Image (cartoon, rainbow, N blue to C red; front, top):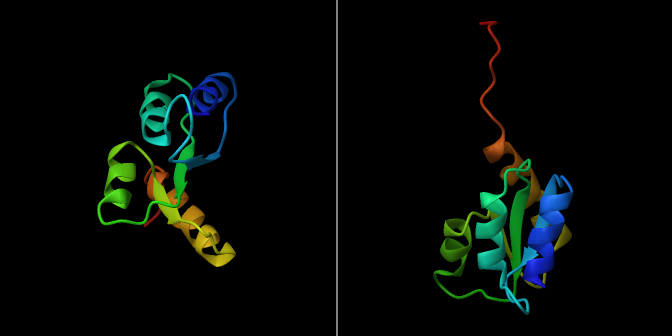
Length: 98
């Protein structure tokens, strides 16, 4: 459930969380908001959901998720979403070389 996801992220540092949107106790949107409030290192959060209606992706991103996949998930789509989400959360390079 979403509450357990939040608790896990508060106790462990995860690089990536695949967050279901529809979970008991606390849904994935609220869980993502709560994870974003934690003082711990922030994971990349990708929504994995059967919700594929207009506005669902935007709701997930507004809740603090970094990416969105609708089920059924295809391996190549998962790979591409992970790569683009990680790249978008990396800090800019501080290299001093031209």
